[in-house]
Amino acid sequence: MAALLGAKTPLRRVAIFGGTHGNELSGVLLVKHWEEDGAEVQRAGLQVKPFIANPRAVQKGTSKEMTEDSPYEVSQAQEIQRLFGPKGSEDAYDVILDLHNTTANMGCTLILETSKNDLLIQMFHYIKSALAPVPCFVYLIDHPSLKYATTRSVAKHPVGVEVGPQPQGVLRADILDRMRRIVQHALDFIQYFNEGREFPACSLEVYQVTEKVDYPRKENGEIAAVIHPSLQDQDWKPLNPGDPMFLTLDGKIIPFDGDCTVYPVFVNEAAYYEKGEAFAKTLKVTLMAKSLNSPSP
Amino acid sequence: MAALLGAKTPLRRVAIFGGTHGNELSGVLLVKHWEEDGAEVQRAGLQVKPFIANPRAVQKGTSKEMTEDSPYEVSQAQEIQRLFGPKGSEDAYDVILDLHNTTANMGCTLILETSKNDLLIQMFHYIKSALAPVPCFVYLIDHPSLKYATTRSVAKHPVGVEVGPQPQGVLRADILDRMRRIVQHALDFIQYFNEGREFPACSLEVYQVTEKVDYPRKENGEIAAVIHPSLQDQDWKPLNPGDPMFLTLDGKIIPFDGDCTVYPVFVNEAAYYEKGEAFAKTLKVTLMAKSLNSPSP
Image (cartoon, rainbow over all chains, first blue to last red; front, side, top):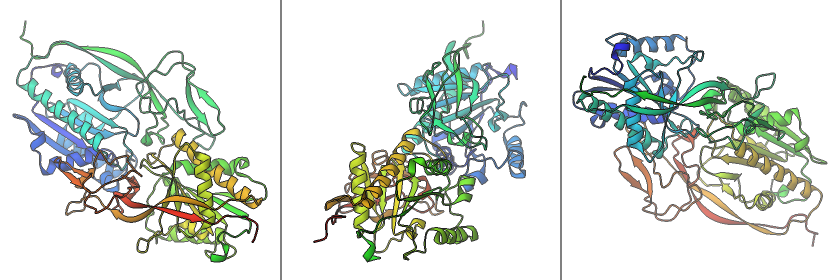
């Protein structure tokens, strides 16, 4: 793998996943649209495949992976390996753009799986610049103990795209437009990269996950407090020790008891209630990427 | 029935329903809280029963009535008739407050099933005044051809409470607080009414449903356009003939082709995609109610 990262090898095969979670509708609508008329996502020299990643979840309109080892989920994961993998091999797709929505107020978010991918750091830097003044944040899920198993990771360069806030089962025009622009800019970057455009060394501010925080719960597992109003919708903003974090039904404030400032993300994401995650703590980190396509020394 | 409306008979039995739709979580959380500790909803001389209306939907976290005539739904409706009805009888509960959330930007909404209920017009007038300056709207679902079959209608005075916007499967502190205040004010009104307080004749502005509008759809039934950004989140605001209504993926604007100004509600409600409702058109109507508890002439 290491030899591929930041290499000048062109990126020839790109997949766009929608419907990994069936009730995150922006990606579902876009992928179905591009399956019917792919002109918008075609680029010279590039093979772009829009793909509904979990057709049964889309049909049911659900976000619940029935359980990750249900026969359907397993066979669907195998199908994705067959079509876009195998993971870690030369045959794997170059890039997968995996389109998601969140109920959290995260705006435009790109998800990076490893800090050691200069190509994606450059791509994300490009997308951020192209979207400005609309902000775009990068969530880095590289962590020694937290495990993220994504289907998109079969690709050499897996890209998670999260746009919110949007309720499950709803299509908002504003969210759809932002997701669409992210995909456009990602494909533009790939085309420019293939054409040999030089991307000078750059830095990228990312928010690296450090810990997941669950809701306070009763003995029976039910929620005992909700996100405090002063934290609600404040994704990417600093949460300082002592700041209000949760609010019980009796009006008691539960403050943040950490020992340093963190930046919460996925605050009050619907799909994470059952996963025991009220929000994820992140720390700001700056990543550096070498120049791409620069003349060899 | 007619003899009961606006009568001076005290209202002794009130039920508070949560979880009629299992993923509308504010009511679920409040009802479970009040089942454990009902002090907040107790009033002198009043029997108040918090009740999870559809336990299986709550457990599954779903809004889908499997189908209204599934064995479970039928038996649950029978149970509600047994506990709180029978509908139309002297034995029926006086009031049911049925707590719902919507993904639409409807704020605090009270749902009135008939324009001929002076007691509820007075109650809604009281709640609106008590909530001010927070706006509270009244949606009247009395219509000659559109049918609304609500489980709460087993009560003599059925009250629908809708608070939004809140995604399905999410608990927001601000929405929870508003729903809670509506319930408080409703119970206060009932207590004052029972105590013989006089409520002078009043008028109430309501939004009466006239028609449901579906999304433009492809031949296979899939959504072909989304709510236009200038209509999104604009519940209760005027939609004039020619105003943008939907936006296709090709950027085509579909304008409102009505012949008079309407006031859309339930704009982009998640649960209504499968019911073929992008929003409901309403017209503004002013209802009048006689005074309550005034000395007999």
